[in-house]
Length: 311
Image 1 (tube, rainbow, N blue to C red):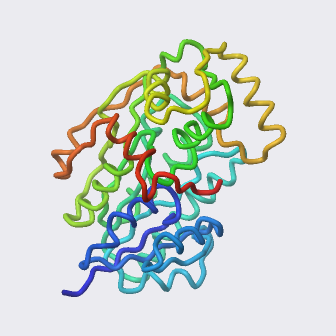
Image 2: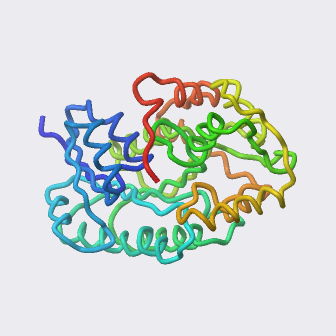
């Protein structure tokens, strides 16, 4: 059997690392990763020494585009999620997608999986939301068969932000602050389930736009309490007023050019919204992992549970 060549951009990030971890043992697939983050590329090579990865900035045309030759499909997965500079979001989410799609056309690649985000459905108006909305328009206008997947907030192995950062913060501080009453509905999505959807899309060449939301709706405060119960850290959970929390994040950003959690993300956190819950397990033929089990796998797994990407 000739293996299908799958190219994954953003391969050294959260979704990319998890996708490779679960697909690299399949004899019918040859994986090639591309990522620009030097430290995380080095980590990728250590964790997945049997998988080729190219260190390159896909927002700029270059020799890396030659790696798409002969590919069966591309997973367009690179993303700027956090930060304070708009051009970083434009470069990584929009310009990079333009360059990748152009390279796909030149190499005659007939399918891609476009990783979007649930934020395109949200009430938030920030750099990330606007850039992901523009990216989806590029997918639609590409003329190449594809599927668009819109995940909600994800967590899992290799998580350097969001729940992963919050979990590690619990070990570094005696007090863990929760803004306000913590009653902000969340629908966290286990990245292990999400990459199963990506794999199913590659196998079936699924099309359309699909909201891949977490099925478990849980208040932010309850979610943090569940993680606290699983990992049993040193921190004590304490509720503090929202404006105090916002001020602390603003102050932290004055001393850290790449804060792991920003005031914009806090503002998005407290928006009272839920996302559509579609039957993606049935649509893609995958099994959903219950939330607590997924959290336990994330933080207690002996192989990947302690591996952390750099910011």
